[in-house]
Length: 265
Ligand code: IYR
Image (cartoon, rainbow, N blue to C red; front, side):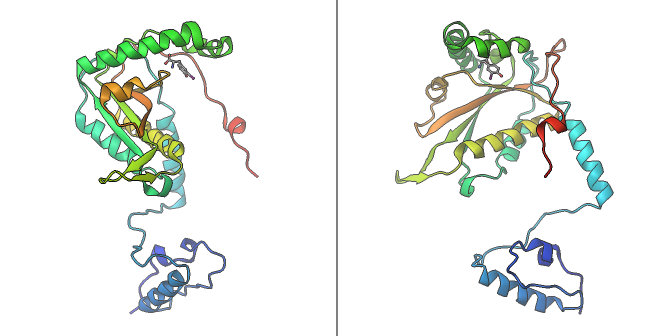
């Protein structure tokens, strides 16, 4: 019996130029599988690999429309600092964290941990410590040059949204892992991994209709103490999450054009 070549058997899914693996539509499927196994064996691919399960290719027109639609959606995202105190369904927060957890990352060691804070007393403590750090930043530590570029954003040491917003979610990077018996596990590309996960997380929340603010008080060590996180973890940022206040205002800023941010060679 002849059936069409599945995606994972197509030549384009095989990266190495050295492979001499050609598919002819007339080749019986079992022979194709046998050939594929031979190729994978030569590549030292672990035998427990499975065929790419959920990939979807779209017809070109649909692909173009999806890319434009996604850009139109993501460009509506704005960082806000005026939050409503309206409750947000926790399921949306959970799904967004699950989405972040699918991020590509170093050796799939998933070097992150999320702490979801909704308890008003804990939010209050975080606000107090963050404002202390920011007071120092704005009035002692920050160089003039830095304050100058922050000026259009209208930021200062007052962070009332840390109590108003229904959720403060802290993403911690795990600089190394620890086994149950206490042994250290080396982690790789931790900052890159956590940065990618954070981008996907913010995108997921925006897609659900929530607004966010990436907040990075400096230093953030106080978050380990307040949230009782171990010393192998370091707070990466606080994602303030909720609905915008009805009268929320944002700075009138623009993004660089494609020409400014990309070169095609
Ligand atoms: N962490 C401070 C300062 C700040 C720094 C940058 I770079 C920003 O893009 C925005 C703020 C604060 O949150 O006010």
